[in-house]
Length: 480
Ligand SMILES: *[C@@H]1O[C@H](CO)[C@@H](O)[C@H](O)[C@H]1NC(C)=O
Ligand SMILES: *[C@@H]1O[C@H](CO)[C@@H](O)[C@H](O)[C@H]1NC(C)=O
Image 1 (spheres, rainbow, N blue to C red):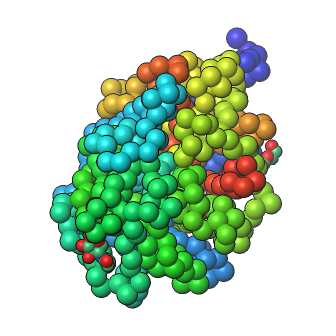
Image 2: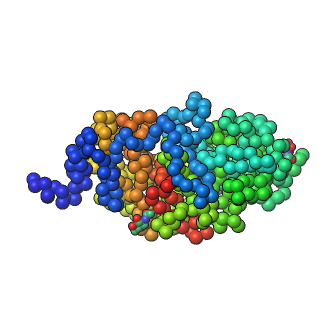
């Protein structure tokens, strides 16, 4: 068969990659993405994240007032001093699955009309709300004088909370536990304040008339304590007196040495809602790769990406059965030059949320099957190996200096096409070795379960939540 007919055939991508592999033998420079629309990625394996050391950001931070975001378990995290507390891949993936299960349970339960949102006089023991592991951390100031505390941030839940003295039960954290009695501005809320009644899970300590909050994350993690206000310092110039948060004295969970959780969901009590008069329900972030310190979280339009002209916006929507979540619409997925043949109703019938706390993107079973088939076809040059759950498409990259993988682009509502970074395509189960790489996606168990666009796929993208404008912006080449 003539070479030209092979190249022009519809299945030419993998053949082209195969040619490229031959060209890219040892010593030949790597060219990076040859085509602007990232049909494939050519990667020099040795240059890749994850690295065992922190790659410091070189960006000039002086012009933008942003919070620095780093990966919780990566080498840039200052919470990593106790190596023994670093979870294994199996633990990370099992927490991730718990989070996914609890998101799906919450949406399912509520749609049955047995919602857990109703007012409850006592704290339920189990609410099906989110598990709070998260993966990305930021440091903010609580109280007067200000104490810096590092929290995981979470677009899938609303209430911000920190561990507080006197601890009835606190998990170990790196920073000293917040002691409200040392803050001149700390106040307990009384039970009859409107913010106390807005809590989905609340109680009242009747002898002292103190409002009690609770959040159960659906696995075995929870937090309980006093619902309170104090001064929150986001960045030195942005100080919020009387910020409502949970002062948690009874906390259990996999929050991994962080001092608590920053809730960025859609509820008026989330940080986004409480700061709306200043920031207009607008925030943005760029999640860095595992070993990079270049991530940011910013509030308000001014803090957003500097190259905002190059953002493309898709619509954000809400669903009454999941009022905290940010719903987006997936129209299509492209692998290399192939647009997967997936009926749009596969995506639309269950819906999709974007979530900062879920690691691995979950797709509807039919969509995942189509992605896997196409990816495997285009990766025929590598040996498939057995990988850890939830991955079922893993490759042995040992002996390869360079790896060529097809690009994966998501097409969102409004035909916004977002090319994923290499880190959103291949996940390395062992963060110290690049010999095994897995397709960084998983399928849901059932077609009715919501799709989740997770944080591994969001890495290095600028993601802008313009909640009032009803739109979500994506930009490539973020974190720089
Ligand atoms: C907040 O309420 C708890 C429980 O009633 C109490 O122990 C604590 O002293 C109160 N803190 C302040 C600052 O009032
Ligand atoms: C936005 O969309 C245009 C047209 O599809 C595309 O050329 C551009 O690369 C996109 N920008 C980003 C940041 O994705």
